Image (tube, rainbow, N blue to C red):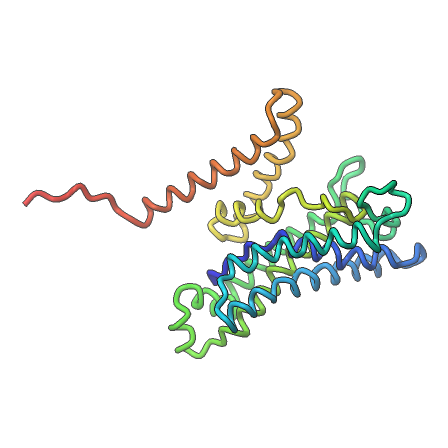
Amino acid sequence: MKFWNIGAYGQYIMGAIFSSFFALNSSDATSPFILLTLMCLAGIAGGALWALIPALLKLVWEVNEVISTLLLNYIALYILKYFMYGPWRDPKSHGFPLSKMFAENAQLPKLIRHTRVHLGIVFGIIAVIVIYIVIKKTRFGYENRVIGENAYAARYAGINIFKNTMIAMAISGGIAGLAGMSQVSGVIHLLQIQINPDYGYTAIIVAWLASLNPIAVLLVAVLLGGIEAGGSQIQMIMHVPFGIVGVIESSILFALLGGEIFKTYRIDFGRKK
């Protein structure tokens, strides 16, 4: 659709906050299936609602979505800080901005014992398949591609740009929110300020490297995930700063964007008369 969502960071945080509400306010006797389902739905809802704000700003007042989605990231972060320094801080955390640990029924089950591989990876695979089908095989996906190519032509053809944009952004934010739920429930098992090691911004690099292809996203995500995971080993073994990971990712993206110039334009040194 060519609607640039730079706000996955904030949508990820809001998904974590919404899902944590159920984790922190449910009894230990609640069925894990029911509680985790509620947390997933809450995470999707939190991310989707946060994504609809810039969509409305764009559609009603033509506010640039790059700026609005980016600035909303910081608002989401300060909302998280409010809860972590306020009502959700664990009294036993000795002043640190942490919630209490989630009960076992609020934790996503591990797929491989003694690792951090949990059920959230299945959510990602399912999302890839569903989004590919929606984009490539449905009328909604076709209409969105038309809007991205030429919004004026899409409006002339009778496509409802307002409805399509709102739905697309709700899906985009909902997936980011589900990722936030997966992080707090499947990995760290609590809510804290440092729940997001720049996954939202890394997602932009993943999307570009994959040329906006959902299937390719899965492969590129594994590649960059390996780079992120290996950063700590590089730091310990080779004694280089962890920031080298960002340098590698940025260099890959820079090379990709530079290559787009040669795909779009042709160098002409002038013809002889």
